[in-house]
Length: 189
Image (cartoon, rainbow, N blue to C red; front, side, top):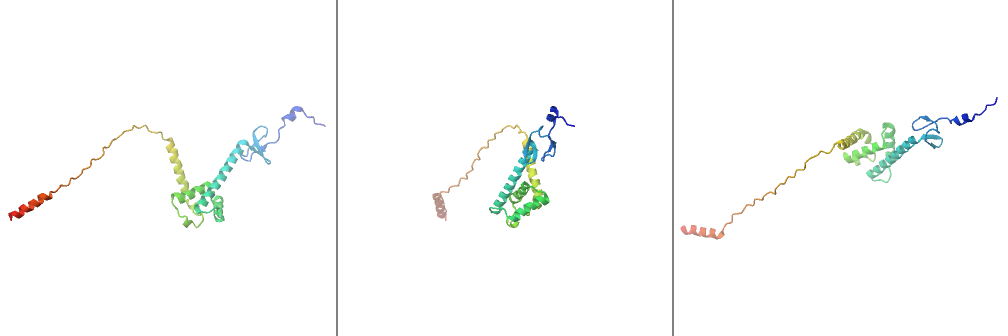
Protein backbone atom coordinates (compact mmCIF):
# COMPACT_ATOMS: atom_id res chain seq x y z
CA UNK A 1 0.00 0.00 0.00
CA UNK A 2 1.07 3.42 -0.83
CA UNK A 3 0.86 6.15 1.73
CA UNK A 4 -0.69 9.24 0.47
CA UNK A 5 0.71 12.55 1.61
CA UNK A 6 -2.02 14.75 2.68
CA UNK A 7 -1.01 18.32 2.16
CA UNK A 8 -2.14 19.41 5.66
CA UNK A 9 -0.23 16.62 7.41
CA UNK A 10 3.04 17.53 5.73
CA UNK A 11 2.74 21.14 6.85
CA UNK A 12 1.73 20.22 10.37
CA UNK A 13 4.70 17.94 11.02
CA UNK A 14 7.25 19.70 13.16
CA UNK A 15 10.91 18.98 13.43
CA UNK A 16 11.91 17.19 16.62
CA UNK A 17 12.37 19.12 19.81
CA UNK A 18 15.81 20.40 20.75
CA UNK A 19 17.23 20.86 24.21
CA UNK A 20 18.61 24.23 25.34
CA UNK A 21 22.06 23.75 26.99
CA UNK A 22 21.45 26.82 29.16
CA UNK A 23 18.22 25.91 30.95
CA UNK A 24 17.83 22.24 29.92
CA UNK A 25 14.27 22.69 28.60
CA UNK A 26 13.11 21.18 25.34
CA UNK A 27 11.52 23.37 22.69
CA UNK A 28 10.52 23.42 19.04
CA UNK A 29 12.79 25.54 16.90
CA UNK A 30 9.85 26.82 14.91
CA UNK A 31 7.96 28.08 17.96
CA UNK A 32 10.58 29.96 19.97
CA UNK A 33 13.36 32.42 19.15
CA UNK A 34 16.68 30.66 19.33
CA UNK A 35 20.35 30.88 18.47
CA UNK A 36 22.05 28.04 16.61
CA UNK A 37 25.69 27.53 17.60
CA UNK A 38 27.48 24.54 16.11
CA UNK A 39 24.97 21.74 16.62
CA UNK A 40 23.28 23.28 19.70
CA UNK A 41 20.14 25.36 19.89
CA UNK A 42 19.92 27.96 22.67
CA UNK A 43 17.00 30.06 23.82
CA UNK A 44 17.96 33.64 23.01
CA UNK A 45 17.61 34.66 26.67
CA UNK A 46 19.66 31.71 27.91
CA UNK A 47 22.43 32.42 25.42
CA UNK A 48 22.57 36.12 26.33
CA UNK A 49 22.67 35.28 30.05
CA UNK A 50 25.43 32.73 29.47
CA UNK A 51 27.50 35.17 27.40
CA UNK A 52 27.12 37.89 30.03
CA UNK A 53 28.29 35.49 32.76
CA UNK A 54 31.23 34.46 30.56
CA UNK A 55 32.28 38.09 29.98
CA UNK A 56 32.02 38.84 33.70
CA UNK A 57 34.13 35.80 34.52
CA UNK A 58 36.80 36.80 32.00
CA UNK A 59 36.82 40.34 33.40
CA UNK A 60 37.15 38.99 36.96
CA UNK A 61 40.16 36.89 35.88
CA UNK A 62 41.81 39.92 34.26
CA UNK A 63 41.14 42.08 37.32
CA UNK A 64 42.60 39.44 39.64
CA UNK A 65 45.72 38.99 37.50
CA UNK A 66 46.25 42.76 37.17
CA UNK A 67 45.93 43.22 40.93
CA UNK A 68 48.38 40.39 41.65
CA UNK A 69 50.88 41.83 39.16
CA UNK A 70 50.56 45.27 40.75
CA UNK A 71 50.78 43.83 44.26
CA UNK A 72 53.97 41.86 43.65
CA UNK A 73 55.48 44.30 41.16
CA UNK A 74 55.69 41.87 38.24
CA UNK A 75 54.40 41.92 34.68
CA UNK A 76 52.92 38.40 34.81
CA UNK A 77 51.35 36.02 37.31
CA UNK A 78 53.75 33.31 38.45
CA UNK A 79 52.91 29.63 37.91
CA UNK A 80 52.84 29.15 41.69
CA UNK A 81 50.07 31.74 42.07
CA UNK A 82 48.17 30.31 39.08
CA UNK A 83 48.26 26.89 40.76
CA UNK A 84 47.09 28.42 44.05
CA UNK A 85 44.18 30.11 42.26
CA UNK A 86 43.22 26.89 40.47
CA UNK A 87 43.35 24.96 43.76
CA UNK A 88 41.22 27.54 45.56
CA UNK A 89 38.62 27.45 42.81
CA UNK A 90 38.44 23.65 42.57
CA UNK A 91 38.96 22.68 46.21
CA UNK A 92 37.24 25.54 48.07
CA UNK A 93 34.78 26.68 45.37
CA UNK A 94 36.11 30.25 45.57
CA UNK A 95 35.49 32.68 42.73
CA UNK A 96 38.02 34.92 41.02
CA UNK A 97 36.23 38.01 42.30
CA UNK A 98 36.12 36.49 45.80
CA UNK A 99 39.87 35.87 45.73
CA UNK A 100 40.43 39.43 44.50
CA UNK A 101 38.24 40.81 47.28
CA UNK A 102 40.10 38.72 49.87
CA UNK A 103 43.47 39.99 48.67
CA UNK A 104 42.29 43.60 48.73
CA UNK A 105 40.85 43.05 52.20
CA UNK A 106 44.09 41.55 53.50
CA UNK A 107 46.61 43.90 51.92
CA UNK A 108 44.64 47.17 51.85
CA UNK A 109 42.24 47.00 54.80
CA UNK A 110 44.21 44.81 57.22
CA UNK A 111 47.61 46.03 55.95
CA UNK A 112 49.00 42.51 55.63
CA UNK A 113 52.69 42.20 54.79
CA UNK A 114 53.62 41.41 51.21
CA UNK A 115 57.04 40.22 52.36
CA UNK A 116 55.48 37.59 54.63
CA UNK A 117 53.44 36.21 51.73
CA UNK A 118 56.63 34.79 50.15
CA UNK A 119 55.41 35.56 46.64
CA UNK A 120 52.14 33.66 46.99
CA UNK A 121 48.51 34.14 47.92
CA UNK A 122 48.18 31.27 50.39
CA UNK A 123 46.53 33.53 52.97
CA UNK A 124 43.27 33.62 50.99
CA UNK A 125 41.61 30.45 52.41
CA UNK A 126 42.18 31.75 55.93
CA UNK A 127 40.70 35.22 55.35
CA UNK A 128 38.08 34.51 52.68
CA UNK A 129 35.18 34.31 55.12
CA UNK A 130 36.29 37.44 57.03
CA UNK A 131 36.60 39.35 53.75
CA UNK A 132 33.14 38.17 52.67
CA UNK A 133 31.63 39.37 55.95
CA UNK A 134 33.46 42.69 55.61
CA UNK A 135 32.13 43.32 52.09
CA UNK A 136 28.64 42.15 53.07
CA UNK A 137 28.58 44.66 55.93
CA UNK A 138 29.65 47.43 53.54
CA UNK A 139 26.95 46.41 51.08
CA UNK A 140 24.36 46.32 53.86
CA UNK A 141 25.42 49.78 55.04
CA UNK A 142 25.03 51.13 51.48
CA UNK A 143 21.54 49.64 51.25
CA UNK A 144 20.52 51.11 54.60
CA UNK A 145 21.89 54.51 53.57
CA UNK A 146 19.88 54.41 50.35
CA UNK A 147 16.70 53.64 52.26
CA UNK A 148 17.12 56.48 54.74
CA UNK A 149 15.11 59.46 53.75
CA UNK A 150 16.65 62.82 54.29
CA UNK A 151 15.50 64.40 57.50
CA UNK A 152 14.06 67.88 57.19
CA UNK A 153 16.03 70.01 59.56
CA UNK A 154 16.06 73.67 60.19
CA UNK A 155 19.29 75.43 59.65
CA UNK A 156 20.29 77.29 62.78
CA UNK A 157 23.03 79.84 62.42
CA UNK A 158 25.00 80.41 65.57
CA UNK A 159 27.30 83.36 65.66
CA UNK A 160 30.13 83.09 68.08
CA UNK A 161 31.76 86.42 68.90
CA UNK A 162 35.48 86.49 68.59
CA UNK A 163 37.14 86.32 71.98
CA UNK A 164 38.42 89.56 73.43
CA UNK A 165 42.05 89.55 74.06
CA UNK A 166 43.06 90.55 77.56
CA UNK A 167 46.32 92.34 77.27
CA UNK A 168 48.15 92.67 80.50
CA UNK A 169 49.55 96.10 80.72
CA UNK A 170 52.95 96.18 82.15
CA UNK A 171 53.40 98.66 84.90
CA UNK A 172 55.98 101.01 83.69
CA UNK A 173 58.51 102.05 86.20
CA UNK A 174 59.80 105.56 85.98
CA UNK A 175 63.53 105.19 86.39
CA UNK A 176 63.92 108.85 87.13
CA UNK A 177 61.50 108.51 90.04
CA UNK A 178 63.43 105.56 91.41
CA UNK A 179 66.67 107.48 91.26
CA UNK A 180 65.09 110.37 93.12
CA UNK A 181 63.64 107.95 95.64
CA UNK A 182 67.04 106.43 96.27
CA UNK A 183 68.53 109.85 96.63
CA UNK A 184 65.94 110.83 99.12
CA UNK A 185 66.51 107.63 101.02
CA UNK A 186 70.24 108.28 100.94
CA UNK A 187 69.71 111.89 102.11
CA UNK A 188 67.95 110.73 105.26
CA UNK A 189 70.84 108.64 106.37
